[in-house]
Length: 112
Image 1 (cartoon, rainbow, N blue to C red):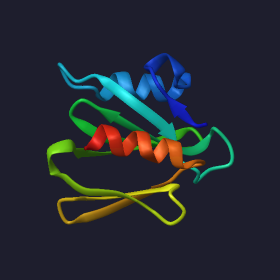
Image 2 (image 1 turned 45 degrees about the horizontal axis):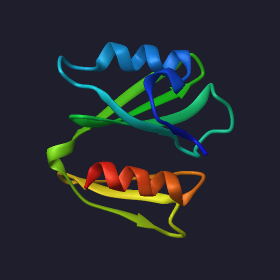
Image 3 (image 1 turned 180 degrees about the vertical axis):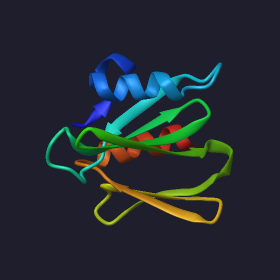
């Protein structure tokens, strides 16, 4: 399972990026590695915090961050065979693939 239950479960690079972007009073809730990359140097980690859903994408030595405020997220659902998380955030439709349905279920529970 690719689920991270606590910040210490994240790899060092992702944990460092997360520490840099967390706002005052915001805390880690759960995270997971999406199945878009084969190596740890090229992957997306999705992190749910108390205020946002963050997408931390690593490509080689570069990284990028996208964030979606939880109050703007609606219609979160599992699609396909249950391993794809999809939600609407404002005008954007966001989706992530994960290794198993249990990860998607956990995200749906946290986003409910």
